[in-house]
Length: 270
Image 1 (cartoon, helix red, strand yellow):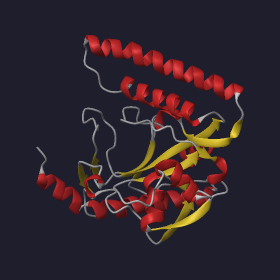
Image 2 (cartoon, helix red, strand yellow):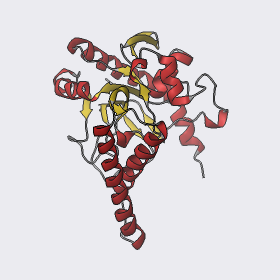
Image 3 (tube, one colour):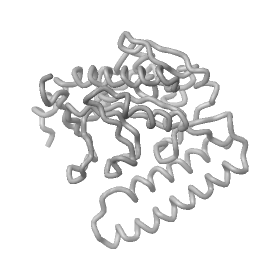
């Protein structure tokens, strides 16, 4: 049964959540500008910038993209640059995290999402997601979708919490084999097919099989988001059509849902 009190509390704290996430994005932007690291608003964040001038009203996260090489540079410099109270969370420094995604977390907050594991000791504050992008081979989009969804779904199942049973035992072998097969085919295609025209998220994070033309991303442009200027893809229209097709259409009310289960934007008053 839906807890209406909890839903009302989460909705009440949504704007405070958004503003704190915006402050994290500003800090990431400051560091990237200082070290000449490229990034761009991605996903629903870019959609919000184009369609709403800021956050999608019911959205509770911020996504940005970087090339894999730039993400490596960011991970090198960010720990010494981030202001007090922010934490760079990576699959290496917190391997128990529920997703293989680099995040900048705010430690003075608490953000509960579906799939969070409270037996695992990883930071659960508000965050900005940073997705690494790589070059894709010039192959049919249907191939990309089959391979990336195969890799991402298999990875997710293999890294989820399992309880011993005949089904989980068989799933381990089935999805383990599928993951290896898809990675092998991907590696072969990357060796045999021309690269440089397309890019997208790394395979484990590309569950929808999205692929962008590189000239829709570079050279990077700028866009206004919540009254502030951030980096954006060269062609936001083409980029968003790849993601959402008719992206200016407002979804029906029943789909305008906050992702979080619980939001506590500030643990201690500063």
